Structure formats: structure tokens, C-alpha cells
Image 1 (tube, rainbow, N blue to C red):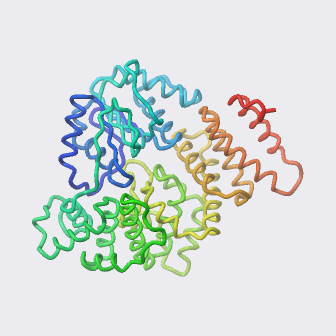
Image 2 (image 1 turned 120 degrees about the horizontal axis):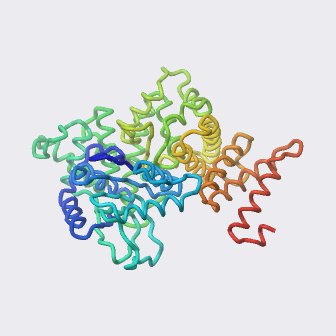
Image 3 (image 1 turned 60 degrees about the vertical axis):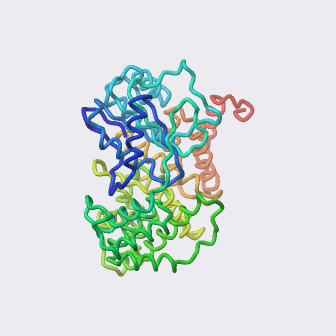
Length: 463
């Protein structure tokens, strides 16, 4: 999310950041001398967290700081439009993404003393940057897990935490050391157990954060967690490469956290599993206040002491499964945690929950008609994510079709025609399977598909 105003920024919240001092110093020096830097590394290694910490430390050195999430078309568009609005660029959202991006790019080439962070960047294979392409006048940080980086961009690789920083992270996160305490201030036995755990978790910040959250929530010892981790069943799918060892660490840490949550009100775990089916960022808290989503949470808490939505969110934040944006009512869940949680669904239940979330999204979009484009685009991204996980013929019902069609309309307005076309096709399939009299929606969908294919110059399909 972009921001403006002196010394202000809107990046996701940072919690218990530990280590990376040398990396942050190198990043600062690279930006001072070359204006741009690319942070690369494996998924889950902490690239975004490192950039967030850089912003926190050096925000006062910039007049403006902007953060754009480029993971999907929707997040990129949301943040680009928000950036344009905050710097008072004359961008008309109805003219679509290309217009907004062009305006921002033109502005940035003359903006001094600014920092632009582009997260989740994907580079086309073999991409290069020619001398004719102008970079922003300020500093630019690109964050990617791609390996094929344009050679012109300074590249800084981020590795897993070493065992000293990993041990410090888990002790601070677990509430066993104060945030400013050093590892040397821990007792010998505690320090030894923490170092062993850091090695077992492959220095993965995500897994260490989960382990610390478990220790804080359960009040167990570090050594008890080490023993529980060793005894946890090995996932059925074996790692294919050394890099996947960190993925396995996250899966086991996630599994232990789910075991802990099994003894808490069921609505807490139900909320976490629902979030795993959505896009990882910009999950609106209000989405779960819709009746269609609340029905699942209430059903999960049946015959148990009821728990409010906010209390459930707090529990998940403490455990490390969710991150809560302090400034806005949004949640986020790391993609590797989402992947681990999705494995807990049966095929049938997964499709049921996708349908339930699409119902909630449709209600949400209806109540936000004419509202802020940012929030509607966020929900559109989640609808597209849910649709991509659905199987052919699994979706049914007018509410689901309406959700897909509403999202398609918004994408079409922004010029994202290919994405819109896929959603219209899914909505059309639902309407065609629905028994009853002739439906005008079917004719409208066919007409829309014809226009879209014409715009895409696929004239044979349009005909």
C-alpha cells in the first residue's frame, strides 16, 4: 500500500525482527551508490521483512515512501491507484491499470528523495533494462524470488538466519527474552535448546516465528518443543531439493500449531483454514463478518464457549499464523503457511469452503457497491483466487455465479480482459447448469465473451 507525507509509510507490520544487520547495511550502501537494489532469495527466507525493517530504520531519510505489492494484478492495481491518489496525480480509475501505471512511472522519474518498494516482482525471462528506460529519481527496492534477474540491477541475496539469530528470534518471539535482550543474557540450558531448535528449523524465519508463537501460547519450554518437533510425523511428500527442507520445517511447525489450536475454541482453527484458501495479502476482516462466513465460524464453535471474531484473530496472530495490519482492517497469511494449512482439507471440504467464501464475497461486494475501489479490487483478487482452486462443475448457485461475474466486471473495467474472461466463463458454466426458464444472464455472458475475444483479437473464437 502506498503512502505519502513526510516520514510515513504503509508496509505490513513487522514483529520481532532479528538479525540481518550486515544485509541492511549493504542494502543502504547499494541504494546510496546505485539508487536501485534487488532482494532475492528462496520463499520464506524473510525478504519482505528485511525490506520492511529497512523502511522502518531509514524512513526519515526520505520525503516519501511507497510500497507496492506486485504479486497479482489486483494488488498491483490497488497500490498503484492508491499511490496516484495520495500524490494527487490526475488518474481516473475507470481508465484502467495501464493509465495509472503510466502516470505513476512518469511522476517517479522526477521525484527526488523518495523510496519505492516493489514486492513480489516477477521478471520476464531474459529481461533487460535498456538505457532508454528511466528509473525513478529516488531509491528503488525490488523484492523477488526469481533467479533470472536483469543483469543491470544490483542484486543482494538473502539467506536463512544463522543459528545465533535464529535462536534469538525464537526466544524473543516466545516471550523468554525481552525484545532488546541479547542471546548471551539467556541461561546456558535455554540458549543451548534455542540453538538446537534454530538448526532443526533450518534458520527459516517463518518456522521460527511459528515455534516462538507456540511456546508463548502454550507456555511450554524450548526443549519440550524440540522433542515435539522430533516426534512429529514426517510429511508424506518428501523434499525434492535442499531448499525444500525449509518448507518441511514450516509444515511441521504448522502441524504443531494446529495441534495446539485443536484444544482451543474451534472457530479459531476454522478462521485460519478459511484464510488459507484466499490470496495471502489484503484479506478484509469485514469479509468474515458476512453472514455466509459467520455461519461456518458459529458452526465450528457449536457446543463450545463462543469466541468473537477479533479474539480468534488475536489468537492466530499470537501463534504466528496470521499478521494483522495495525493501520487498516486487513489480515495476511504467509503463502507457505497457507500451503501447509490447505493440506488439512479433504477434497470435498475444500470445495465446500470455496463455495462458502464465494457466497461471503458476493454479499461483501453487494454491500460495497459504489464504495472504495481499493477494497472492491482486494475482494476481486480473492474471488479470482477461489475460482482458480475450484474444480470443473464444483461451483453452483446464483450467488457464486454473481460473485464471479461482479469480479469479472471490475477486472474488465481495469483492462484486465484475460482475467475477466476466465471468470465470465466460470459464471456462464454455472448458469448453464442451473435448471429453470431461459436466463438472460446466459445471453449477456455470451455477448461479453464475444466482445472480450474481439478485443483480444481472437476473432475465430469471437465469431
